Image 1 (cartoon, rainbow, N blue to C red):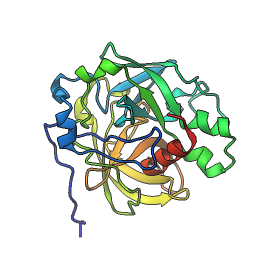
Image 2: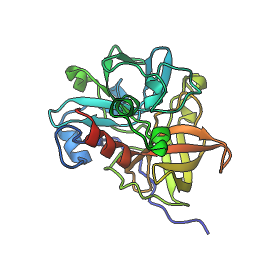
Image 3: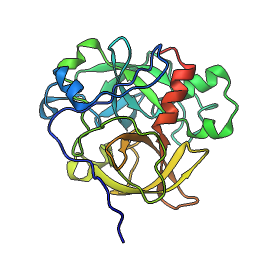
Image 4: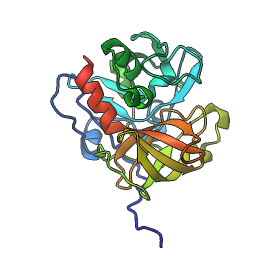
Length: 267
């Protein structure tokens, strides 16, 4: 029998995830009402939002969620491997070369240019991370947006709406998940962007959710945000796996990735 689920509702008003990643002792999320009060333009008139394509050094990936720090600056999240400077098949965040912090990151379809402000790969290399599991799974980066981006920014996830907050990172086998990818390989076919999926495993010391999606996550979708059944920000689409679940997608546990950033970064 199918499991009942609270499917994230498609909504028109702005919902955002605001995370204190600077000089804070805890991570917090603000609700749709708080986002609405900040005067973001409607999603239909916004050129910067979750699901846009970010590009740097001839690599293109999909942005996940909008973040804000204690000083009120805005960021777009993406996968750290999108700002590596090595071949795409390289995937060890503690060893593979990375672009320097401050590298310009473009937003496709917009004149907005951000700057790489945090990379889990750069941070792990800087502090000498030795946990092999963390090296292979901690795949998260933040792009700081210019302060005037508020005139073109909307924090809502296309199609699904949300996120309504930060998920605790304990989704289990059989839980439904939702995502929106925007790989350039789809040639702009937006109907293929929304993804419905299910968690088939939680692994790597809870750093990774293995998920099956319809439509599948393909190259260029890397970095996409993943919502849980309650519409909360659960993770970041990161990899395509062949074992133990063939053609499953690895999703980074966002709660763990943010906690790592908070503990080891000066953002």
